[in-house]
Amino acid sequence: MNCPSRPDADVHIEGWNQNPSDLAADTTTRNDLNHIANSRQQRGHRLDPTDPSLIDVVAVQQPEHTDSEHKNQKKSSGKKEYKATEQERDVAAMPTSLYGGSSGADGPSSPVMASLTRAREILVKYSKFVGPGFMVAVAYIDPGNYATDVAAGATYRFKLLFIILMSNLFAIFLQALCVKLGTVTGMNLAENCKAHLPSWLNYVLYFFAESAIIATDIAEVIGTAIALNVLINVPLVAGCAISIVDVLIILLFYRPQNGSMKALRAFEFFVMALVLGVVICFCFQLSLIENTSVKEVFRGYLPSHAVVESKGLLQSCGILGATVMPHSLYLGSGIVQPRLKEFDVRAGAISPSHGDEDDPALEKYRPSISAIRACMKYSIIECAISLFTFALFVNSSILIVAGASLSNTPAAEDADLFAIHDLLARTLAPVAGTIFALALLLSGTSAGIVCTIAGQMVSEGQLNWTVAPWVRRLITRAISITPSIIIAGAVGKQGLSRALEGSQVALSVILPFVSAPLIYFTCRNSVMTVATDGEGEVVGEGEARVFGGVKMRNGWVTIVVAGVIWGIIVVMNVALLVLVGLGIE
Image (spheres, rainbow, N blue to C red):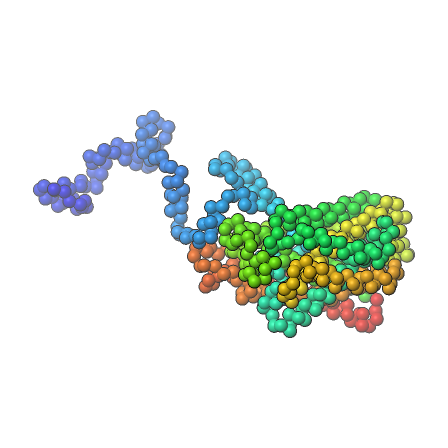
């Protein structure tokens, strides 16, 4: 007769097999006696595991496990059990090639290899997000920048490079907020205005947004017409009409909601090719500059008294408006959704037809928390890199070329783009003027395309038009192109550069009205909360759990920086309006 084990060694009842005392634990009659004893000896005294007498001990201590058992042990060894949602389990089961990642079963053999593998995975994933940042950068190198930057370089040489750098940093920060708003809400800035603001305020903001797009398109169309006139002698009015061809390109390729991702990527690469063409043109222009100190150029990125002078302030506001363009905020918040939707479609969270733009009756697409966490960081980084490299380089190059070549020329300060083309051909090289006109043409074409896309977002989002997308795009383009043709026909060559500079100053004045809702929305929990099922959700950096969702609004540091940037923009524009009212130029 047996009984359960008991610790009290003093009780002895005949017929019962009691366990020995604790001191005799290693002398029991178990069939693993020697293994246990030797195992304890090895742990306590750190015996050499290569000792032949311990081979059996090591074999017992480290039994063979299957891969599935090993994974189960790793999962169960955590301090807190993680219960994943059904959607996250689907995402975890997806192939690692969805947005990059290693497909090998075995890990790297060394820390160096692990670092290289991780870097390769990041680059592969980052490459899938390249494209939208270039489209935003196009908005910052339009023909309006040529007029303002050339005038600033001819007047103050390199002293206003500081304004270009400051404006570019402002643009990067605001575009990061745009990406965050569009990623978290699944709606662009115009759609958020329609959803969260009173009707009267929404219509007022629509008026400012449409005015900004018209002012922007005036610059694109006039710049394209001037470039065609200089290169192949096309009449200005005909050049304005030709610029409507870019709408046909958009109709063929740009279908962000229900079109093929390959077609969308092809469209983005086309815009990228135009941007790279502009960069190559200015690399050649910079190579022609002589007798200019690099130290003097870089000193221009430091603050200067020229910024607070009356004419310098006017040109600074023009540079600010040409760089941080209001329509780019709508664009930046609306071009990130296709990659989010692709992620959710591949994860099986939604169907490919969800949120089809040709069927307004379908439910509006809202990104999942998994898609937001997988895409937002890379979208912000890609946009920031594109702006800080290409947009900053092109705008700086325009001013540097003008400052080095035209600052000592008496006629350059009041020259229009036609005269600047001739001056560059005489002062630098005959081909310099042609390269300048070619860059102007590429900038006007690419900027006109993205301006039309932004105009479509504004009209669709804030007015909720229900007509076919191609009709909306054509009407939007017609609204913007008509004033350009009128100006080109009425003014001619004289005064076109003045019209370009005036359009950029108007954009600067409109900028505070457009950027204020962006900052407001990204600071509100009611807007920046992602609905979840509440099961197994892990709160990441900058997030906070609420009932049924995750809050992703701006932190206090971001709110303070946004307020400072908005305040600087307002102060500059108030000072500008005061100077214009006093008639000081």
